[in-house]
Length: 364
Image (cartoon, rainbow, N blue to C red):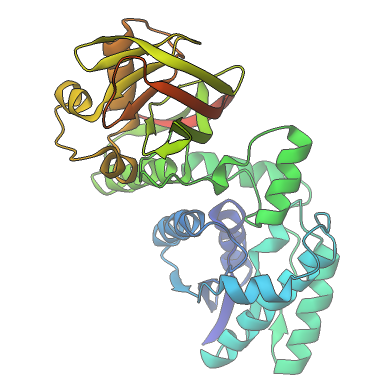
C-alpha cells in the first residue's frame, strides 16, 4: 500500500490539509510526522503537539513525534536571527524539516511525502515546492505539492479549525519571528516568559495547555462545550528587587504590583499585625508569617515562596484582603522580617496590557 508521510507544523494548517489529502489519495495511508525544532519555548511545542495529536485522533491518522532538537536549530539559523518572515531563515528551517521528513519517509518505506506548511499564508509555497522536489529526486520519492488554500480553501480551513475547536496559535513558533512580530505590534513577547515561581500566569502557554487538556477530557467524556474568547487586563512583572541598607532581600512581589516611577526609597513608618507601610508610593510590606496566616500556607521563608508560589487567583484574593480595594495596584512585597524606620529601596518594573484568552464553557 502506498504511504504518504506528512510533516505537520500545527493542527490549524494540518487538519483541513489532511482531510483533502485523504480524498485525493484514497488508496494511500497518510502518516503524520510532527517535526518542528523551530518552536520555542518547549511548552509551546508540547501544546502544539498535543493539539495535533487531538486532531489526528479525530481523523484516525497515525502520528509520529520527531526529535525536538532546538540546539541544532539554533546552530543552523545562526546569523539569520534578523531575517524577515519568508526570508532566508525560513528557507533554512524549511530545508531542515523537509529533509528530516524525507528521511523519515524512506525509513517507513513510504513513497511520498509533503508538508502542511503549504496551508500557511505566511509561508512561501514556491520555496516549499522547490525544496520538496529537490529532496524527492535525491531520495527517490514523490513530493506532493497541493495548494489547498486557494479559492475557498482558506474559508474551509478556518471553518474546520473552529468546528473542531483546535488551538489557533498567534505566531509561527520561531522566537526570532515572534520578537519581530511583537515589536511591530508594540506588544510584550510574554510567550517567552516563564516565572521561577512555577505559577501559571493568565494566558501563558501553561494556561493554554490546561485549557486544551480540559478540551480533550470533555471530548472523551462526550460532553457538549464551546471555546470562547475573553477580553481582559493582563499583567507581567519584569523586574522586582528589594534592598535594605544596600543589601538585597529575598522578596516576592504580589500580582498586579506597580510603580509608576519604577524606583522608590523610603522608610517603614507604620506596622500593624505583620504588615508594614512605606512612607512613599503606597508600598505595602508583609512578613512571611503574616502571608502564611492570610494564605493558609506554611512557607518557611520568602525564598521558598519565590520558587513555589500560590496560584495567581489566590494572589489576587490576598491583594484584596490586604488592601480592601477591588482594583489596587499598590506594590505588595513579601519579605521575611520588617521593622519600624527600616530603610527600603525598591526597583519594580511591571506592565499591564489588554489581552484575549480562551475560555471553555460547558453546555451539558
